[in-house]
Image (cartoon, rainbow, N blue to C red; front, side, top):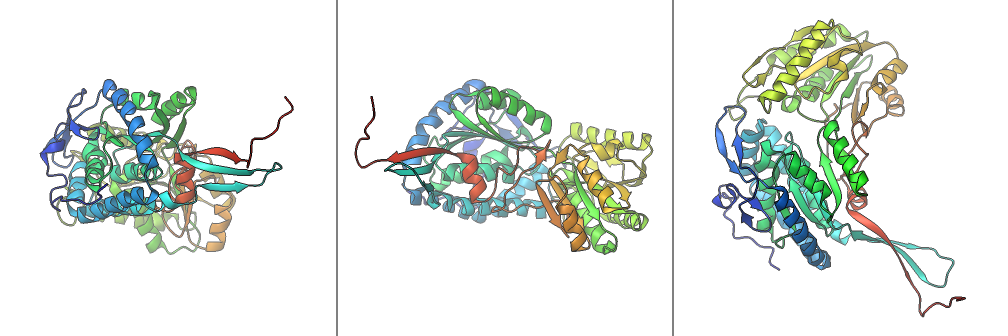
Length: 494
């Protein structure tokens, strides 16, 4: 099998083959409605993606199950070569990919560059999985060898969201493929190119055998079919908690595994004595990165009472000075919200928070899909801006007096994805030992991810650290088989 490509380094996505098509090992017309690709910053049309139907999913699941067996039987070095080549292609086509991410997701160039970099890193990290230990030798009371060995699960469905579409797709696609599975990928329809077409084109050029990866864009009915298809053994879902509950319920009824990475309402704690200039910078980055449309966004700023007023003033000044506009233009820090429905929800929560006694210190206004970075003070832990995952550039702030109070406030949320603690490391460690969170970052804000680190949350944030790093990925995308071997047929009393 060849893993080389003759692809021109400027034409990964500037290629008519994917226009209005789905990918099933080849680009073909799907049975679903075509998906318009719109630039949120301008409203301009960027093209048209193909849409899948339920029948397409059923056919792809059957084809993927057949292709998976041959893919899993290939030499580990051959599978690893495909993943390495994919990583290299992500690097070679970074600028083209980043342009699409900027225009399709509304992300600023630094965010787009992060996505392309992490996509390559995920592939390189996954390239080590085919040669990772495939199990362990067990002790046994019997005269035999006893092994627990890891086997590919079979067909994996990956359902990903709009906010970081490339990262949140590839972090499941790459390890699942590397471990010998076939993948059915459904990106969010709003970011079909960044989260789907890009990955299909990369692996097409990297030499992945036809039928091992399928791109099936669509709405809820396609996602449901991807969960229910009999050939699918594992569903890797990233999205809202409400949608994740439905995926988990369906998977449970069908006795399938569902890895659910869901929402977050993440706390950033500013301890007494913290450097407020650095803390305000960290807080602004955590809340306003990609317009707050990140599951790890800092959604709650918890400041020691001795620092509250000064912190609010500094954070508000940061918010007022961040340039808002089309991210394709130079110098922009804050781009558009993904669509009008999401913007309306953000503004509704801000209005509800002020009606409940909150004060808007900065922002709280919008033009078209551009929502100004917003800081809200004067609220209680029951205020809507504090209790809900806003998924927008909104930073609510309250104060605390003791470490015990801070821990209680953090743990009062139904979510448990990420916590940041700024200041004295000794105090921060006491908080880290007591909070219910999938991640804790001391002297960093709440947003952080690396290809080799386990990622996941607890509570309403999902079903734990199921992605990232060899251990988590092997656990997530393989099944354990017990294998025993005797030198001759055993004797039995029957």
